View 1 (cartoon, rainbow, N blue to C red):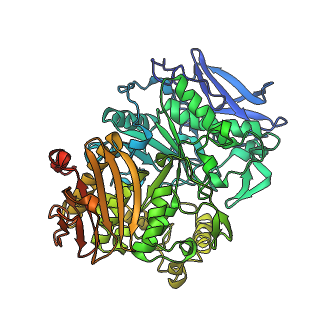
View 2: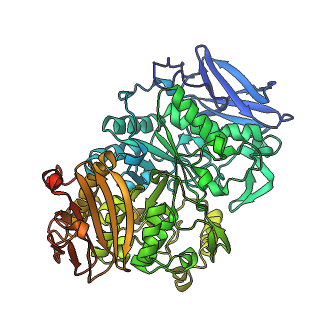
View 3: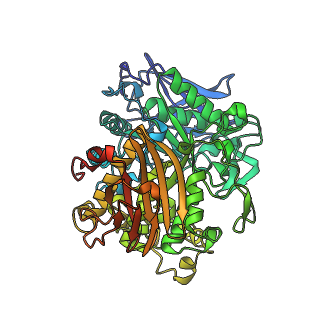
Length: 639
């Protein structure tokens, strides 16, 4: 067996002591497991490839945990558990599954990684630009190390927080990550725990934060051994779209709540994550007080504060519930921000014409889009024909940065029958105009990987389950989206099979495409918009978003040197005149040759404040006092 590694001083070394999983000590390792109290639990240690080299009984402690301490055991030791003579099974709180979720667990020493960028602090919330990426398809290699190789590019683009789709280990070799079962172990297919730490460390060294998508509303259907040891892990009272709900409010729920909250603390403290995006919070059912979500945010925020750090929590929640971002003392759950779907849905309806499924509630009118930007979401208690009930609450008093907007994300692309991106479904000039609205609005923008150069590759739904489970997943997916015409009109053979490895491989980004036309112009457009956004969020104050007719939307920001306007045409030809625009300077437009090879000039009459668009596009106007600063070109195309 391996000798124990002595931990060095690190941000995680003194922050907390977890109660789940193996705990390395000076004289060996303490193994711990939550199981039903009448069970017979044994620890099984491997040695020299022998899966049953040593079997040791574990004793039930007053805490309700089974424990055994083994001298001389250190990092790298592989182990299992038996229950009532059956097994061996991996540890539900394993820190590493080197051979996959059905293989042996491995002891890890988190305190031995030597961090080099411990002074990093994430940007203020209003300055954040999220870049959502899937580790497996972001690069050809599909690893944590390969993501490091793209950090300089992302920094030059103007991104300051990357958001990793879930990396908790899952069954098979490729998956979106929402079928995770080992909620403390980075996916073995992406690299080791220290590979992930190195990614975070290198990102911090470039001034980029890291947000991790975590799933605490269900466990994946393959490899979740939690109820094998503790049947109370699931609730008999609640049900979810994935089966029995997790037990957050019945007998035994204290352990279940702790398991998930410690998972969050593990990522934040042992891996130095700067933000957690909590998946589908609307699907987390809990009738107790405080609600699990409230306890989660309070404990994570408190732990971060004790360690001298700032950590954000973002909820994915479709309900437009203000309580998600209100503090606990005001009856809220205490998240820093929440995803707002309404902007995406209105824009998708307007630009690509989607009208089935949940898009039936959205008309895509300029006035509706402007209202969504001005308020942070559209539905604030109105009746939803799709949900067949009132949806949303008042946004009054909420900050703009408490909502996250996007034009694309993994769900909205990947849950389409053919995984089409918005840039594949809309004219290029419309796409550039929509992008300007996203990136110059006051809400936090999220960019989906490859969106910045209008990547043409689809992002498809892919899995690597066993044959029987894979077939059920494919069938269930068609049923879930049976209200969408694309799924109804295509045969089963025409929709890519999630289980086919080619479906996964087709979703990988082609990085060479960004250097050629028309992708390069789009990439430069995104860089210019993000450069401008940085000035606005650091120095400016957002005033209003207004619609002019059904073609134009304006964004008005106040800066120390004067007013800035973004005038965005969703279609053309159209025109508008505003005396406040008179005397202003044209900063840039989507029809400039740098961004559009076939640019059709947007005419601006400086004396009268008249703008005329021949087609969809965007023009940014600055006060004359800022002309030199805003006409200065960015450092160059990101590489």
